[in-house]
Image 1 (tube, rainbow, N blue to C red):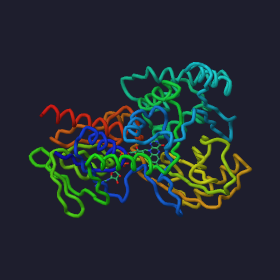
Image 2: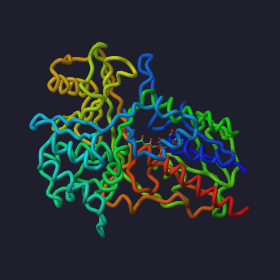
Image 3: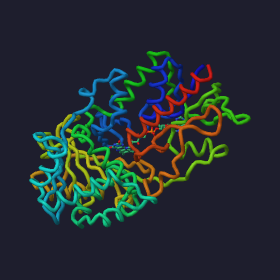
Image 4: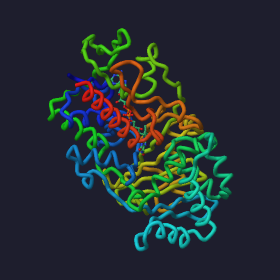
Length: 428
Ligand SMILES: Cc1cc2nc3c(=O)[nH]c(=O)nc-3n(C[C@H](O)[C@H](O)[C@H](O)COP(=O)(O)OP(=O)(O)OC[C@H]3O[C@@H](n4cnc5c(N)ncnc54)[C@H](O)[C@@H]3O)c2cc1C
């Protein structure tokens, strides 16, 4: 009995890999020429870069254990760094968040917060982290409201919480769900190793997508690229199969939809009620400077300007930087040239040693990077299991405690695989 999986992003691949691991046959259909979905590689003048700069953290347990189970050596794929980030703002001194290594956790974090930023910052950040572990309001509220209720200063809101909320939820604090943000904070700061930063050493396509494809095929599964699924055949309340763009029909008793929400709505709208969530963009600006230029640290935050995060991509090519701007905002209306100019100007203003113009630049805009993680989004996210027999949902938008992330996508893929296997085993 073969299960069909629609979508070769990290969620569909996780579902396919876990089912294959259990000895279950899968066919995975991906409309694009390559696997990876929103976390994939693209070519830029002969250099493989990512469609958007991604960052993982040590708390991504599902993703990291899946990678090692399918034969990928995490150390070879990711540069793993202890948390140590400075956020620069034109109006405030730099704010530094470092895990610290000498004292037991979380004392080392507290000590570094106090040493690097003073008593007031330590008190406020500790208070929010403490509140995050106890955040159980009857009703969700916005992150902005939560921060004000927790007496966070305008400086910390602007220099820490707003950039962190955009980086993790891709949603501005004015509308973002405090419930999800609190979960992100409490999960990330549980243990020192959870706060580690993992920057891909390789193009993203060469990480989970490559290893998962090989693993699935080794275990007898098939991966169909450039195979857009155009119809899911459902009769009398149960799945029968699917039809691809070439009018090929594949029959099956179980199908996992692991596409973005918008595609799931198009293909299943007549059978299932799926939410119509807004989505938000992420822009990544790649800048190539002469090879001798480097950032003072692998990751740097910026607040009070358009640029939000800077990554030194030395490992891909010397002199390469990636600047990330998450969420909705004025950057959406700017031309690519204007965006390139503004980001390079902001970098130069912060570090005058870096030239005001890069040698080359590329803007990649993902208009629907993630679903908007607004207040009450948790009530709208559907479950893996649907009321149609044999139809399952995966993808980052399916219910879990997290925002749209690689970890959420992998977790949902795995959960769907587990539930499907349980059902199959029970009916044997
Ligand atoms: C620019 C950017 C930066 C990001 N940064 C981070 C980050 O730093 N950290 C982090 O954790 N997360 C980040 N994310 C979010 C993360 O990439 C996504 O949450 C995750 O990749 C979603 O995976 P998915 O498998 O659920 O969906 P997708 O990756 O969207 O996969 C769905 C797949 O389905 C395919 N498909 C669609 N329709 C069909 C069809 N009809 N037939 C067949 N196939 C179809 C698509 O081509 C796609 O490959 C970022 C996202 C973007 C865009």
